[in-house]
Image (cartoon, rainbow, N blue to C red; front, side, top):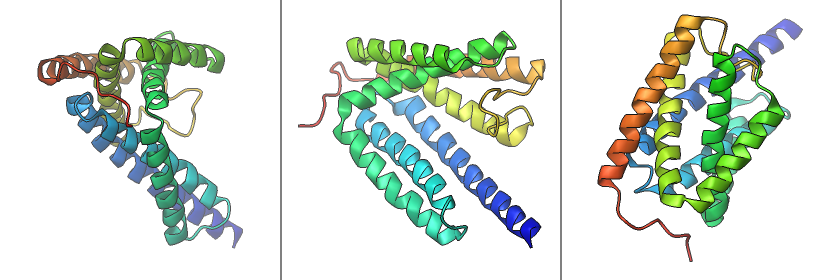
Amino acid sequence: MAVKIFNKNMDLNQDILFVLVVLGILVGALQYFYGYRIFKFILGLFGFLFGGALAAAIGLNFTQEVVVVFLFGLVGGFIGAALMTALYFVGVFIIGSFLGGILGVVLYAVAESNPDPVALLILAVIAGVIALVFQKFMIIVSTGFGGSWMVVIGVAFFATQAINFSNLNQIFRPDGSHLYAIILCWLALGIVGVMVQYRSSPTNVPQSPG
């Protein structure tokens, strides 16, 4: 009986992970091409995904019913979207911090070392502050490289065995060929995304609501 419950729990978590990865790929592609032009919408999507994932995780502690967990995630997603959109400058900081965290993870992966949470936090905070100071530049760079990262990591998760989301201390498994292919694809796509956004972006920085 205990084994069946455990297997059901594992299957549910895996299904939720697959859904989140697919959503991450879609959101990543959207912000990769249009991040600056629809930045407020991107903030709302990020808030929905993060709020939904957090609420679903909390829901799993109370029940294993898929419908109930889905409802938890839906409510948490709408709350997260509303907060992220309303707190515009917090959203700008978080988007910049996201890029800083990605850079930290990549540097540690190249060095074949487990990421230091304190170092990652420092990089994230620095990037977040820079995003607040240089909004247009950092919004474009963060959404371009952040979006390409979400797409590449999501595709690699489904196409290879190189990504391990269950171990946050070592997202990449020790496979050099996969690692460098992922990083090169990310850099190439990120550069293209930044160039596309700069060519198509309006001159004004999107202002906070109100």
